Amino acid sequence: MELHAVADLPEIRPGDDIAELVADRATLEAGDVLTVASTIVSKAEDRAVDLEEFPVSGRAAEIADRLEGITGDEKDPRFAQAVLSESTELLIDAPFLLTETRFGHICVNAGIDRSNVPDNDILLLPKRPTKSAERIRAGLEERGIEDVAVVVTDTCGRPFRHGQRGVALGWAGMPASRDWRGEEDRDGHELGVTVQSVIDELAAAANLVTGEGDGGTPAVVVRDWDFGDHGGSDELFRSVEDDLIRQALREWRFEG
Amino acid sequence: MELHAVADLPEIRPGDDIAELVADRATLEAGDVLTVASTIVSKAEDRAVDLEEFPVSGRAAEIADRLEGITGDEKDPRFAQAVLSESTELLIDAPFLLTETRFGHICVNAGIDRSNVPDNDILLLPKRPTKSAERIRAGLEERGIEDVAVVVTDTCGRPFRHGQRGVALGWAGMPASRDWRGEEDRDGHELGVTVQSVIDELAAAANLVTGEGDGGTPAVVVRDWDFGDHGGSDELFRSVEDDLIRQALREWRFEG
Ligand SMILES: Nc1nc2c(ncn2[C@@H]2O[C@H](COP(=O)(O)OP(=O)(O)O)[C@@H](O)[C@H]2O)c(=O)[nH]1
Ligand SMILES: Nc1nc2c(ncn2[C@@H]2O[C@H](COP(=O)(O)OP(=O)(O)O)[C@@H](O)[C@H]2O)c(=O)[nH]1
Ligand SMILES: [Mn+2]
Ligand SMILES: [Mn+2]
Ligand SMILES: [Mn+2]
Ligand SMILES: [Mn+2]
Image (cartoon, rainbow over the protein chains, first blue to last red):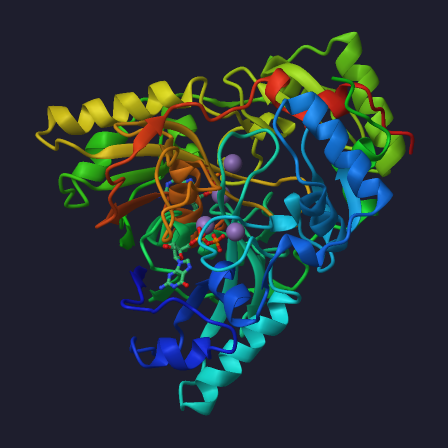
């Protein structure tokens, strides 16, 4: 398996065609996976916005106020409002905001970035990252590039472990996971691990190459990796019934 | 960046020298990262055991009994005892066991595997995976192979997202994370993402190559990836104070 960053991508502007920009700079082959950082997908989809676009609700003012009291840092209630507007559920409201975005992803601040946004205050995540991945894949196909899977990625934190790592937000042209159910181990026994989230593993692998800074390398071509002869699943985000941690969080409140 | 599985590794037995087995089969270069699945580290460290080695405590009997009632599947109380014996804290006791292992890793069933264990009932995780990584790295150095980092990996699940993915349990020869604090984005602003868990990303990348089944490919060489000129951190597992999810779980109980 090989990973190479796509070189020389420009600063991405609203309306830019990512498929075209990548196709002009990289040789893609059937079976490759193209990972694309959500940052540039958002820029292309005009998701860089200013805070003044978020008139503050009472709830957002209250949240920002409490966070300011707890952290001692100034908190803009318009930012809290942007997070609420992007979310369907607020899982933790202090000492930071953990929410479920409208497309089902759980992360801090609804994944809103303040880095790598040149002309606006903030960058929202793509509205429907799987749709974005499908569009990029279709754009490649229009240019005669067939059978390339696309994964839209972000970097985010997680419970239990320090630090952040690359994760998948959207995908097209391959299932989200390898389903190993019914397959056997080296001794002919049934496997313990059943569902391998390969798009998250691809996103994590790509993140080693893209980095988090000024590298200018948001797109990565993965070659010579094969999904293989397995069942597939397209479920990535857990539902509440299926997630004890979410259930526990619903009954809990930070008392700091 | 390139990843290649080490070919032709045999079935690993207690006392086997993983450094030697890998060095005989792969050409390692300075700057490479070698990932090794915990399964074979455990086998080499004699961590394949039988359930009869776990005399059942009252607590284990109670846990197994409740799980049996909830899930409708037969539960061996000796397995519950093995999980307790490997753990320092029980975070969830139903409808499955989520614990913190003695070395700080949080996962279901203390990471105990029933797949890929030929002659015993179960396989415990290595006792101190970072010590294991250091030993393998020292073994490579004894054979004149210098400057190869080693990451001991496992596959496990996570909150919020379906499926399992590769994670790091232990590491040697490199920091666990890249610390981006103080570095700048493309516009000279401070970065949002601060700590990138590169060993977890390496473990996830390698897992795409090792797979979960009968592939027989537990070791992967990562070439042409560079930690780069960043600060580093060796904290991987969050402490309770630093983990709201753990705090929430302490106050919660499954009522199913
Ligand atoms: N060429 C180019 N690179 C960008 C642009 N915006 C961000 N990047 C790069 O994309 C990579 C990922 O950036 P990051 O902010 O971590 O994106 P995220 O993980 O999707 O939130 C880094 O190498 C950035 O330097 C852009 O508009 N053009
Ligand atoms: N050569 C060899 N491969 C093994 C052995 N045990 C497991 N494997 C392989 O190692 C890889 C990872 O196995 P898995 O059970 O998922 O390990 P884990 O992720 O560390 O729990 C798979 O390709 C297995 O077939 C062994 O003793 N020898
Ligand atoms: Mn981001
Ligand atoms: Mn990033
Ligand atoms: Mn395992
Ligand atoms: Mn595995």
